[in-house]
Length: 204
Image (cartoon, rainbow, N blue to C red; front, side, top):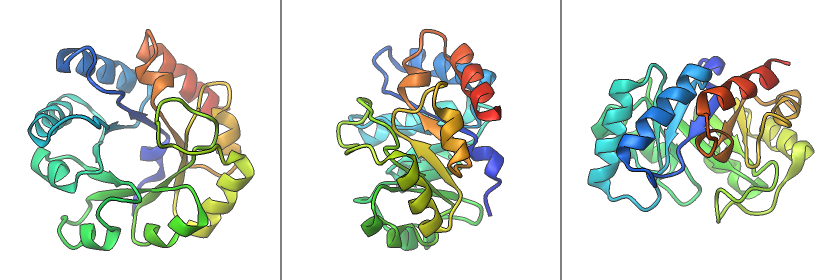
C-alpha cells in the first residue's frame, strides 16, 4: 500500500526545452521546495532518451521518480513506478511484470475509466481546473466531480489540471491526498519557491 505522504505534491516534468542539463536542476529545486514525487513526462522523447533522463533523475533526486506511460522505461531506469494513461498498458498487465512495491498510478477523468483503475496504487483525477499544459486533458471536471470519482475508485487520489497555490487547498479539501502539477512548478522561474508555496497551500 502506498504511503499517502508520497502523493502530497507530484511534480510532472514539462519536457527538456532547456536540455537534460536544465531539467535536472529544476527537478532538484522542486524537490528541495517540497515536491514528494517527480513524474517524468516527455511525450516526444524516444525510449533511449527516456531511460537516460529517468536514470539521471533516479540517481540525483531524494524523492521517488515515476515514468509516464512506459513500464519498460521505468523498469530499465530503476524508477519507483509508472503512471499509466487510459490508452496505456492495463494495470493488471503491468502488475504481472513489475516487482513488489512498484508504484502504479492511473489517470481517471470519467466514469468509464474507473474500472481500469482497479489494482493501481493511486489515481490522478482531472483535469480539475482548466489547463493548457496537456493538449489532450479534456474539459475541466471541477471539485465536486473530482470528489465523486475519487470515491468511486476507492484509491488515494491526486488532483491534476490547472492546480496552483491559489486552488491547491481546495483540492485537498475535496478529498485529495495531494496534487500533481506541471506548469505551476516546472514552468515557474523558481521551482523551489513555487513548490514551497504549493506545500504551504496544501498544509492550510
